[in-house]
Image (cartoon, rainbow, N blue to C red):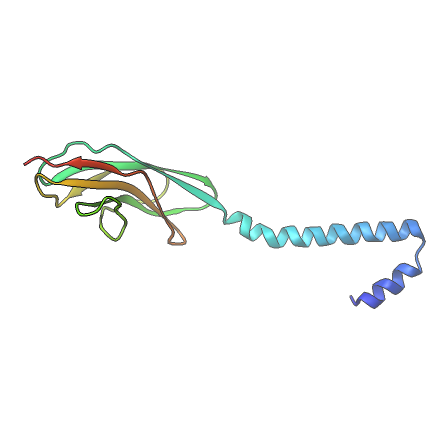
Length: 144
């Protein structure tokens, strides 16, 4: 609807009718704005990743895991742990396990380790948009 038409229409209305018309117009605009934003609000969520302590440590394996908590709507497409024996901040570019999908607790079997070495491990979760979240880093030393 052209602005000139609205101006012409409002001039011909009494003041109470003008106020009523403007209230309805503002309400309609607010509804359109909220409807267009709801798409982005539906996608908003956070993932909290907690790293479990490492146990059952041998010269070549260990047991770890984590817990995934989701706030809002969204999905966890993959989860597991990542570890490194070379640097203190492991990422999914290092060695990883793949331990299912979704939220909740899980156990990870860490394999391919060497004896007498310090390893750094942390839980991770990847969402449906391929964004990775990490838990805290835990270190352990393998026996000989």
